[in-house]
Length: 605
Image 1 (tube, one colour):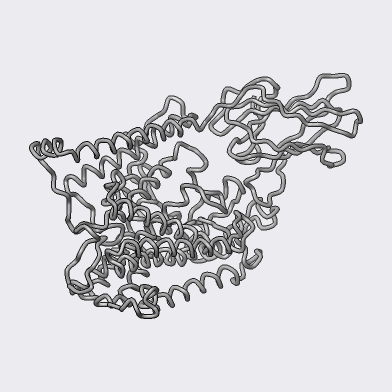
Image 2 (cartoon, one colour; image 1 turned 90 degrees about the vertical axis):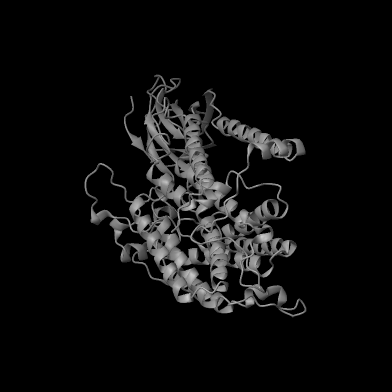
């Protein structure tokens, strides 16, 4: 039977028989039996490839083989998410005898044989696969093929319904009128473009909302719902432990970016319709406050557990970050926005950058804010921690800074908000075994979320100043993506851990913002070209949740533990069952958004 559990996610002591495959393996686990044939006691250590600058962690002792006796065996359960290095040290001399680098497969059964070679001082370690692992990625492949098949069917139907015969038949059966009501997008009203010469709102290219922006928002929202519901329990659909990116790390910055674009288009249209700036300021403050309060409510659920304790109320969160960022960026744009678009001659020497230069006061403010972030991050003294520390603490950095998780960012949150009011289980606990609370939506990172939204605002300026000039818009999106990509490459040295400022979602590092903004500009450019320019794609199904993003986000958070979004599974340790449940739950929210769209129901803040 199991005797004890060690090293967090990696290994725990298991069944003491070399060929016995455990019947209680969980997802992302494999069985390992270590067979010791030498007459020396050994200590087994493990080190994950994903744990940067970590010391090998002790797992347990392998008893020496009795003289003329049978080999001793100790069993373990090991993680299969990342490759591991197993090290064996002689306990009497503390010298390394051998090491094995191996990536275990899920549900596999392995044996590590330790034996002497010709000389007693020489030890060999041989890994043997006793039973083959399962292919845990097949459910993803089948899901991709199923959705690809549905996409092909949809494309065929869209082609067929354009035929005159089919069109006439559909007209006879009845038609639906597309919703054109002025509604709030993600923290901003209409994604429309404004004519410089009139006071009327002229939507982008077609007389409709900028459909590509709603599609991009819905695309990010669908991914967010899916990963929040579990993402099939695959590690790459969860947030990265510290430095680096996974799919889950992409969506929140994209929301912030899209919010910035919506702010630009919304405020520009309101100002040109003659709405007073004082009224707009009040609307901005009120929306920000609503978002903050809704965020505090949904991240502090206490269903059927009695009154909520104020002592443990978490203050930062996703909607709180969005509300604060919206407040700053919207006010900034409200101050610098022009009453009418400036018509410059293409002969003007700075015409190619006029969408930037016209708003230089706002750029100056953002540069000052980013300078503050850099100074606080790299110059603020943190007690018992090195100045400028960006690491995860715990066993990272060879265990020298265990209580320094997040450096200045973590210190500021713990000083301002206190430990009990920030996130208690950060993702750094998974690999780095950090013990300090740390909030990925903390105070210092909010500065860089402002930068992210401001870059989205700049995308909106491009859409405004180059209205109907599709080539100019897409070219500028690509140029912005290229510039930001180069900045990211320099800051990170094109590596996960070795750069000046690594990409880090927990810290919302500067390189994280430039990298995700690069992706956002390119993605928005692709959506704009395919949806609004060429009309190759209607944006469905992402368009529908994109039109009702606040409702879908809050709804999926509130009802995530209720049927039909979650139910008791026959095998809770199956990626396939989790993937099925999470995809079905996400699809239900897309369908709800579609029904609300058809009924012209939108939740406005």
